[in-house]
Length: 186
Length: 197
Image (cartoon, rainbow over all chains, first blue to last red; front, side, top):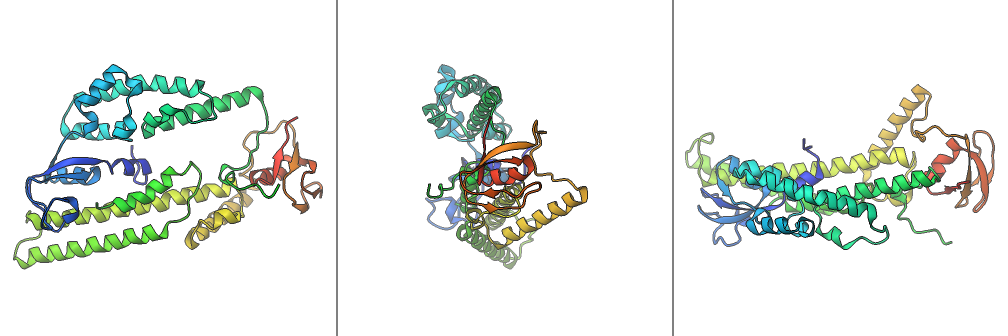
């Protein structure tokens, strides 16, 4: 369950959702860049961050559209080759947003679509995390969503820990927060 | 867009590597608070307008009401951002006591503001009083050692220190055989390194 202080949850809620106002709202000029007055008119189509769209939808002020990252084009790409789809540029919180938005728009296919996408990519991420060289950040990392990146890092660090355990070695290390320090004039 | 600045603070925190602490961004923090005040005055003027028109605040659902609702919810959102920012920083600061020790190095302490330093000190003294009640140092390595002594190389001039069983001269590049518990804090501060056999 999400946590009030969870940074990823808060950042996920910043994703834009296209919403249509069913009623007008006064003095909120920032929301609608096309508006000539400070009032958002009825029927105006506006990009709202998810947190606001969700709230206004519960008050029945707006209706929301399906975000473009769950459209037909993306679905086709996922069907074609799931591991090569650039999900990050579509939405860095692809799965989390999908889970939140599916009950709101009543589209039952989103759930299974997310599952297919995740299942296909999960295997690929783990395989790559275990086999790629550690020095440079591989190119495919730029395709991963936030959650997948964390998964990749976890897999990588467990592999490092395993290797370290096999070889043996020192137990103590300098605290990571201090590692950035410039070496004193050696 | 409303609430964007608040999330910028969190982005800053999350783009850092795990366990790293960016300097407290007071400017953005104050701007978010200013934003909240602006929202609050908007809410007040809009509710005032509804009352002037002689409508009931509880049941009116016109454009003014929804405008006020948006501003109100933006305040709540900003509050969540600010709280999460401070909370997550506090978590990192707490963990520093366990990892780095009682005294923060200069390069970390400059990133804290006054109340965060105070928080660190209080957390530190609470932990210490608990450990002295238990008569046990909880911050040492959790895995029992095979040998109570380890070989270390000194990386920085520390000088002669009184340790639990000896008082070696810890000059730079010298190699010593120290008790694990004594050496641990120096290693985590980066003043020594452990040598494997």
